[in-house]
Length: 348
Image 1 (cartoon, rainbow, N blue to C red):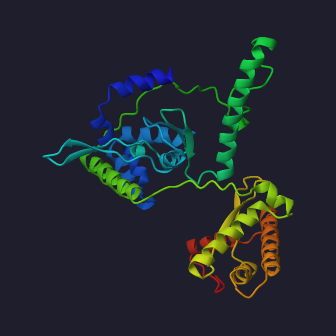
Image 2 (cartoon, rainbow, N blue to C red; image 1 turned 45 degrees about the vertical axis):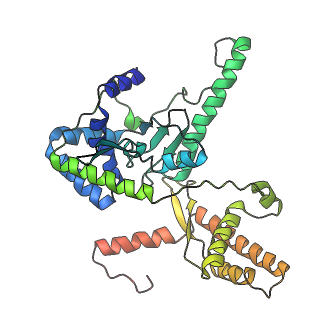
Image 3 (cartoon, rainbow, N blue to C red; image 1 turned 120 degrees about the vertical axis):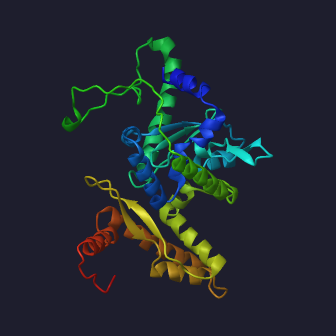
């Protein structure tokens, strides 16, 4: 039913209108610019304000792209920022339209992006959820496809009953605060915004801006097959810490200096816990970089420096996960002080 509604509305929409009215491209602007344009849109009509509320309250956005990536690099680029495809409408009048998937996005939301060939990905706004949450979401969807395949095989043996429970059809237990006798209208319908001329110009400017950024980027997916988690664990080292040290060491070897870096650490063992900021650049890392890149140190000294840096990093990660980090706490106190015009201590 939803697919039929989408197909019906898409057939009635000209490509030129879809491009010029691509409101979602405004979400590619910086937060400050998009905030100003959004306020204009909200104040332009009550209808626009109500339609934005509908999008804001949605759990996610499903983006259907009329595009099939030829390889993993194109797939990654499409999931990251979409494709760029400028078509000529009237060459004499310098009129062009954007038909790439870059305008088929709403970056304020969790986006499920599905291409024409069925390849799919996720692009999400980070302030509302963390990467682990999105990964769990995608993992459940992938698990359900495996379960569905298994059910298709076992159906001949067990009949139509679902001997293997489906993730997507699972019963969802709602909290008492969300229970209501009100049933929302779930019938598919098109969201028709009233777009003033200044908003249409903002859409055009945003489309040009994101187009320039896409043309200035090249995305290549690196798949390292030399060794992986099993080998690192066999050496009694943390794979996460190993990768963090590798990143910092690689930068040092290229540019000759140690840079500040941080890694988010999950604090989900606590209610409403999200992440703590673990500062990866420690004195142990600085020592590792100098020892590893020195021509006067032995192989064993390099390995010892690596092990020591990894061990220290791993202990810091464990402390952060246990709620013993200070970064988020101090940052919150700093913001509270600024909000209430309190002098900020000098150690900041």
